[in-house]
Length: 111
Length: 115
Image (tube, rainbow over all chains, first blue to last red; front, side):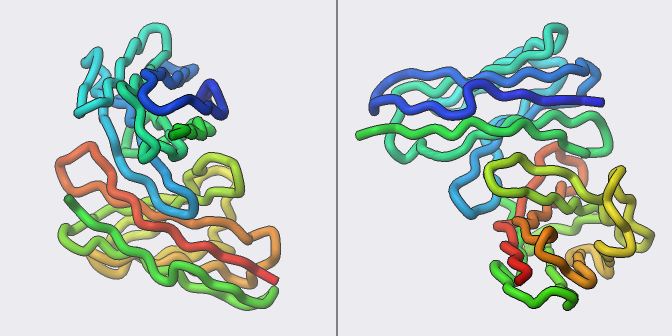
């Protein structure tokens, strides 16, 4: 059974810092991996999707990497801003679009 | 980008009643939609896959007679929580993948509170 773990569970940093969120998964047989953002009491917004054949994806200040063989992904956020405060979830797609989510990292950017 | 809506956004009901939650894809057709449940400070857990024109498929441990799913059209799936109990209180979120794309679009969620 696939298990997805995110570390740390919570992170608080001052504005302007670069930071890395970690995601690990136990079964490397995945189709893709996605990073989502969830604001309190809201749905999910897709940030980046990495196919299993890809190593990384970039969108603006966000960069996500994937090492499928070791079961790891990282989300790098550059020059963090207070508006980046949210919970970040990673999810792996094992087929048929079924996503297995990690517990999330609750990020707080302090002005 | 693609939009998925859910209705209602919040619902409070008495124990024993049934509650229907709607999930709509507003600008694309979705033959498949997914229903997730999220308990406080926990992650999303897939409950079931809703298939247009056929029966839903449920994940292990999810009672199909309690969580009725109907995918009546290519833009609408409904989740009915039957005989709701306080332990069913949760945040229910649906998602839909536009055909041919890997990305899923998530609804804003429905907060269910059962008294």
